[in-house]
Image 1 (tube, rainbow, N blue to C red):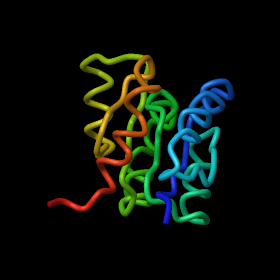
Image 2 (tube, rainbow, N blue to C red):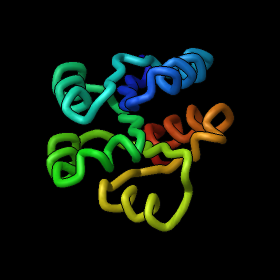
Image 3 (tube, helix red, strand yellow):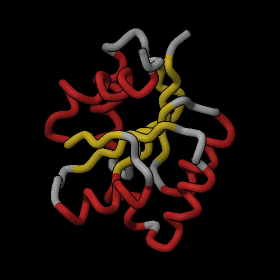
Image 4 (cartoon, one colour):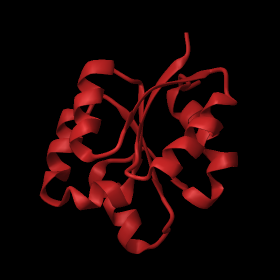
Length: 123
């Protein structure tokens, strides 16, 4: 059974690129794409994915609603993505409780492996 992935990024171009990356991995199934914070929550509730791939800059725009996001999506594993890899972004990923972080510049090689690592049972 494939790992169900929900993608949340406010950039249509980035969503299309990530969709292409994920399609190359037969173990992953992209079940939905959200273009904003509220859509991500609604899709997570409706689609019950295993992993949320979340653009941190999009989440940052939600500002005071970050607690709601983490609370509502607490059962999901989360891979945070961002074009920036600095202290501020890492702190935001931590506040959200992200399980992994992938720099957008390295997604082609690192996104699918990060998702797979999160969902494999521990030995």
